Image (cartoon, rainbow, N blue to C red; front, side, top):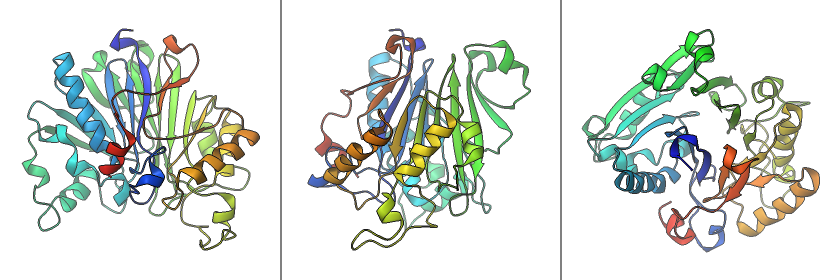
Length: 333
């Protein structure tokens, strides 16, 4: 298939809170959040947890094979440490030919540029953000914004819902934004639409009674919903032995995520941002439980690939060669 016709979602980091490398997390992975969306020949990256480290290596491999420099759009959902901690180790950022467009929220006067500039400052890190060799552009996003990606807008452009380009170019990638208050300090959810297919990324969010209606409208009819499901119901309610109640932490349960998928009528649900306390065996048990409640639900794992393009007919999953081994992936967490 031509690269320009692909619409593929790849999971590079699926763990919440902090990395969990080791033999008990090999199958699902221990890296913190990073999801890649490749659409129409463009690369979009959702969050920069430790999963972005392996993604960076693979982007450089593709760059060598295709003879094209790395160019990507990096979208931060929010700026908590588990969603930014991999960026200082993102290899393409050190390559002069790389072009990175970075977008995210400006909550509490802390934008992606301010946050990364603070993190990448001695004595916390030896290389400053300003010393990176790549071309970097930064912009903040708000709910009315629409990010447009495609040749007709010159690559990457920030517009609004009434921009003429949105109606005139069927090949334009559209990224819409929803601000949620269901996480400490707030979080941005993203919806990526291209050629009639769509993926919604809703991490770090806690549910509401009878479902989050704003999210349901935002995700309505999406082909894939990637939703926070950090906890089991028992853990969330403080009924799991040795684990505290997590109500108010800003994370959902598996049942909250399933409800979100049902009320929004999304075609496929991927549970995401797994609790660091959960090993592979626990996630296997969760997979069995949710399949009985909402058949076809996926438990996101490192290496999972979901195709939304026409070649797949409907969304499907496959294993990428790029991750090599889970042991190697977890060693980088």
